[in-house]
Each structure stands twice: as structure tokens, then as C-alpha cells.
Image 1 (cartoon, rainbow, N blue to C red):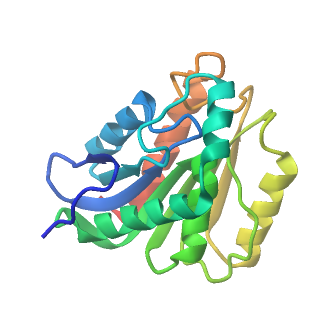
Image 2: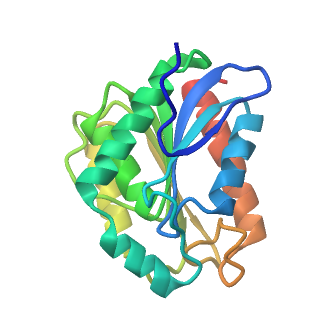
Length: 216
């Protein structure tokens, strides 16, 4: 039997079955863009769950997003993410031995953390313009990273440090930097930052990576 649904968005593929993917929103919250992205991933054949770390609240401005992020309690976020994993694990529609995680900025930080804290559950991690330091030697995932050429929010040194830590741990890792882009370049609702060509390429690379690591 399926578990009750935690707060968030669940999308199933047309086939009714597929590998599980946890999608973790950026500091804007689980807004329309990320809900649509869940549907887009489901059309690729995945069972997708996006936990709502802000529990119904969303931001449209940087000031609002900063406020919501400042109110986010890390321990609660970690519990919400653990619930998301258990929920996907309990889905009869789910298939495969491990889950994928896709995280954006704030969500990338927590997605990387999941691969450290729950290595038996997480087989593939995709991060968009977000990093997290740490020792990845116990991780069992493959990693794909999408980063901006010029990012006022994420230091290039942090990206290099993360890549170095993953390679030192012997993890499969591919990081891409996208020319003439800044933070949020993938998010079509961020009209000041969205870069259509880079977003299209990042999406193709993401779906190829998920097929290679999780199947469909």
C-alpha cells in the first residue's frame, strides 16, 4: 500500500511506473515553475515527488526568498526530505534500486546532503548552481552539475572544491559551466536570468544522465 502523501507535489508517468526522483526547489519555494518541472520529469518516465520545504509559502522577490530561507529550520527540512524518500520508496509505482535527486541552489545543497546521509537510497544527483562541502567517500551516487559562467551567489572556488571532493571519493562526476549565464539560468520564470539555449542543453544532459543512472 502507498503511504499518505507528505506536503509537496507528486507526479506519475503515463505508464504508471518508473524510477523515483526527488526534486528539491530553490529558495523561492515550491512555486509554479517547480511544479511544472515535476510534470515534465514525469513525462520522461519518472515517478517524481517534490517536497514543500516552506509548507505552502513561496517568494517572488529576492527579499522574500531571503526571508523564507532564514526561517527554514534545517532539521525540519531534513525530516521533510527523509519523508519524501520514504514516500517514494513506498510507492507501488516506483521501480529501481535507487532514487535520483535534482536540486536547485538551496535544493542542491540539501540534495547533496541526502547523498551523504542516505547513500543506500541515492544513486544519482543533479545539482543546478549549488554546492555543499564534505567528505563524499561514503556516497554511492553519480553526480551531474550545471553551473553558471558568472554567478554572484555561488563562488567558483566552491564548485571546484565540490568537484575535487567527489573525484577524491571516486564518484562519477561531470560538471558543466554554461557560457553567458548567471544564477537561475534554468528557471524560465526568472526572466532576468533565464537563458533558453543553456536551459535546453542542461535539460538534455539531465535526462540523458537520469536514463544512464536510473533507467526509466
